[in-house]
Length: 314
Image (cartoon, rainbow, N blue to C red; front, top):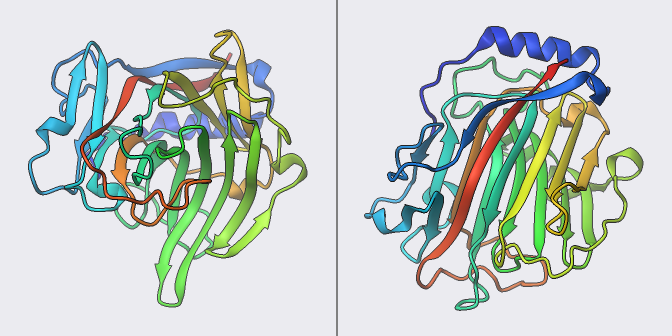
């Protein structure tokens, strides 16, 4: 699912160069809004800033709608398992460093506690499917896969999955990739893991500057399916910071992970801002090992707005 794009090479190149000069000094940066998708129209397949796609063959009009400025997208039992089989949106243009944010409420699962469902808000590009950019820019011999994720396995709405990929490739002798990841229970403040991985099963625990903050204060009664929350990540050349707006104080930003480690683990390649919902039959939520069931009925995620802001020098 890739869209025809107009790539602003001059502005991206300029920004990448200036960002490299002094990316850690936040006092020299300001955010400038590139777009906000408010879902003001009435056709969920024709948005101003995003294009829609799905791998589903059977009709799916009842799984997409816009009501009162809220985009609602669902999975149901007719979806095949897999990310590209669900409802997927990707921005019409590539973007690079900046602030990405969205106001989201994931589906409630009281009617089927072990349903296998995933909601994603993320950036994505892959050299396997796209030809707009130079391939293997980090020259490590693995297909570039620039991706920064917020993900929710809807069976456990208290947990958030944070991931950043640089590479991903299926090889004859197995899958090889490069990714950092953190799993957090925001209701309890428990951090299940903060890791770096190169292959399935080859996982390294991250420490020191790659594991900040080491503790997170719980958000009382946090449940991503009960309320809208504002989530975001700041992407720089040498830092990715995932965050959530404190629901009790909108002026307060809670840092979920402030990664300032090995810069080879931070993608430097433009990607498409994306969001989706899909059925999984092999990825169970933490504390819910049986949560891979085929959906019975429709489960709707709700997106209030999505925004991309570029970082510029003052």
